[in-house]
Length: 358
Image (tube, rainbow, N blue to C red):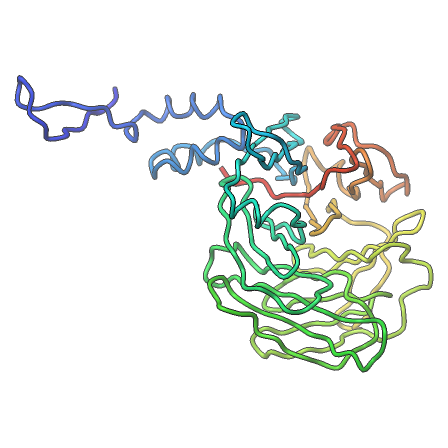
């Protein structure tokens, strides 16, 4: 039975009773929750504490694979331009479309901005010197200070709304050693970025990941550097000699696998390395153990076990019109019909995004 709440207004019997939606029985909340798409479930949980607690017991697929998100621009029913985000969900085999109508300022901020990083369900977008983080599920948008460097890579350390979140950008040039490495750090709400300069190495920063107080940056050829936030210190960890000539036909991509750094290079096959901290060098590996990788603007490593252990060793990546995976066991690449079977037109921006926790 739904409880009633007195609102204090007079009526014939002296009081008027009104329904209080937050007091709906857990069973009823569960039935409502089950009829919603995973994206709408995020908004359902945001209504009040009782609804959030009731929905927290709902089962989630395991492992929590990233969703494939595509971005496009459409005309809304009201005739305004809108951002159309499509979320392709692997275990649900379901696509949810979220249309976000934009006012004048939001339109100026987001139109033409590129996704530079995707973590914790948030996107970091940049348009010229203007950057912001955007949650495509809740549509929350938070601005960053203008940045004055022509950065190669930019990322953030934790959930953007948390007080310990740091934003990190790095600029490095291959032209000459006389060009300094520039590292910029800021937190949400800061008025400006803090810039540090270090000796250049004549290589371009190709990817960056954060782990335990350190931003790790990989440069062309697999050279690895590290910026310690607490010490504000920069060090090149590996030798300056490229790993192997011809391993990197495209930009190197680095993945944090529960504290282990993995490096992926590609030719007609994939080459994967693990960073050996004792020898300070990259070591070629022949298997991914229980991990599957997702390569993108931000790459993910997902541990699998039990019924999903057959997915271990797969490396998923975006191609022009679909999602493909490389099977590390037999070095074969193929289209993914099992988890991500959707066609994704080549002109759409494709991003791996971590699903929200229900």
